[in-house]
Image (cartoon, rainbow, N blue to C red; front, side, top):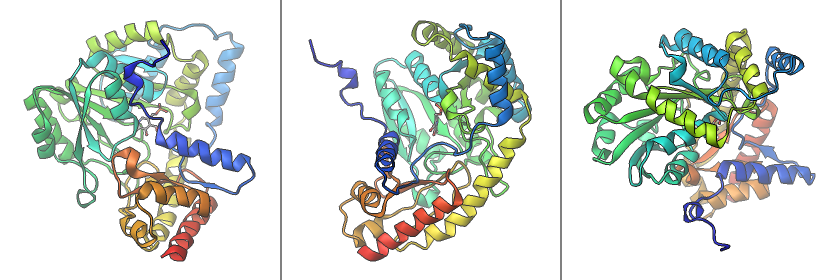
Length: 394
Ligand code: PLP
């Protein structure tokens, strides 16, 4: 009777959240820890958004909304997709959920039957495989090597497709890689998906965080066919520094989104009403702060990147988007005498007092992930501590 359901047997807690929690615990105990683990912007939510949320509460907008989200918020999202991607969607093709994470969870629940395969390029965001497995699907990993800038090719995807393949995931800009797929790369991938008739799940949560004049392209923009088979996943968490508000959305096939809305009506009901009003302002209000934050991230990256590259035994590709650095630390791990990146990251936390995430949870056992969503002082101090730690143990 006391046994847990088998579906959670292999479920492990998100490594990102686990290390971040441990670092917070150490901080609370008075230990001076530099947190480079976090997956969220360090700015407060912009003021106009806070005010819109407060106003909605004052106006008594504190009740249930339709399960799939307020029509006004869907319209704001539809306008955003038109403005930024030039894509047209109807309200029935949009669902607002409890963050992009839960929207993805619901999508896998309605899309997958037992044994259906989902192709996941690695390194990947930790939750994709777990969510696929929770829907009784099978994650199929395709490796994006450092030599290929952590990206996978259309050919690799073609080779991985079987008659059980239901969907592929594209996450660009990517977590943890920070890489961006070009229009040409996406065009080739979309063509394979058309040929083999598989869905495309395009996680664009880092859309607004692109650097060096790079451009975010959604695979859905590339052709009518690509649009029809793509689910765009996005939200306000990273673009508007609203991780705690828990608002994300999907735009795509009406039948699938309809099934998701049904499922939401029996599982979550609507995402928090106040958060939805905040998100309306995020999308309809001034976008100036989005650009201010983007520029700030870019300047942190430009300051941190050369310093991290100078750490002995660290091999770092310069990211093009998101807010992570993913150095290959194989040599440093070996020269400092640790068995693997997990032990190395653990030692960085307990000895050097810097929280970073080992790549293992992202399907990469030679890297660690550092987030630069923190002040430049903290970032520089964190990298200096890592540098010192590696030199001391070399
Ligand atoms: N997708 C990726 C690639 C992410 O990194 C994250 C957050 O870390 C999410 C989705 C989830 O975002 P949300 O806060 O909207 O659930």
